[in-house]
Amino acid sequence: MLNEIERKIKDEISDNPVFLISRLKDKEDIVLTFDQSSPWVSTILSSITAEYEPEEMIEPILNVEITLKRDSNNTFGEYLVAHGSVTGQYMASCVKCLDDAKQEFSSEFTGAYVHSRYENDPEYEEVDEIYIDEKVCDLYFHDRGKANLSELITEATVLAINPYPSCKSECKGLCGQCGENKNHVDCGHH
Ligand SMILES: [Zn+2]
Ligand SMILES: [Zn+2]
Image 1 (spheres, rainbow, N blue to C red):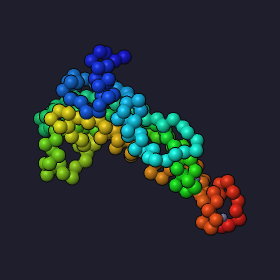
Image 2: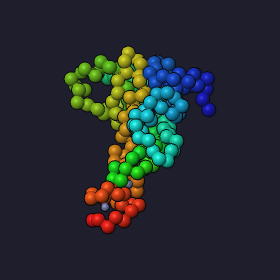
Image 3: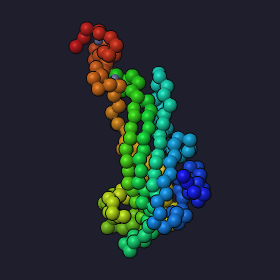
């Protein structure tokens, strides 16, 4: 159960993924869940479903579970650790036969937001992971205490989905000669 502060933070982040990390209690985990009813989660989902219009409609889903913790150390000052999972489904177009290909995905992520001054620090220029809070975390930056969760969730979602969706593992594809879908028609060509 969420307490009142957690509920308030959840409501705010649900509307707007940019929030002040100082609002979180120091060193205390807070677990939040979001889905496509949040406008920014819905935007991420639309960006992966692109403009494909399936024959069979399924409800596109993106569920986000995220644990947030604010902490600080001597190296980075105040930082935010965010770990959790993205799971969902959507309809894509099979890369071989162009039929509907229902896609389900699930993936975990761990990210850390450190102050944006490190973004221009030559030492961190080539770095996209840091070891912090006893974890290897993907590196993100907060802007004077404001973290944007949409960046992290977008990247986690893009990495979770299959870039080459397939309707089934043994999809026969389209005929190179007549263009028929070989899953449905035996056109006799090879
Ligand atoms: Zn196919
Ligand atoms: Zn053919």
